[in-house]
Image (cartoon, rainbow, N blue to C red; front, side, top):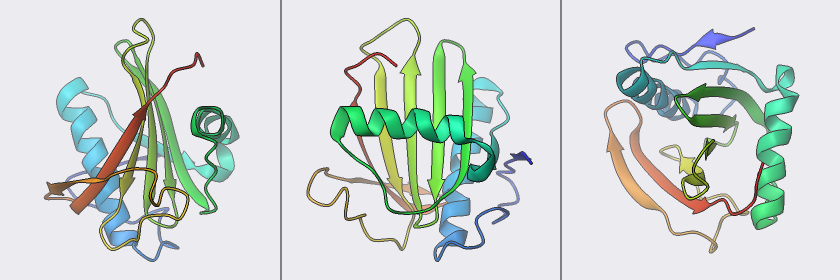
Length: 154
């Protein structure tokens, strides 16, 4: 069952099993606010158990580009297109968010982003491989993020 993320009243629906559920819910709401403000797009998530296609897409890019696979359990995903940008998100029980930004018509603007919820440690899979910048968010507290540029075609 899909869920439209409310960024005015942050809810942990679908994220309850995460040890950082409140922070992860804030991170998810932060993404929802961004897409509503910039594109007038309602950010909708579905349980990971109902979105194997999105998981396969994101996991395939992670594996081929950087030989990455996360041990954490995926809780929710989101996949949509705004303007010329295909977006895919996976929210993990650990508090990690992985997003894929893939422009349809510009190979130079394609990337995978990682965001860490406040209160979580850097996942072992990313430790020492990426530097994380900090960003303050009214909804999510301190977000640590990093990214890499996608070189292949997906």
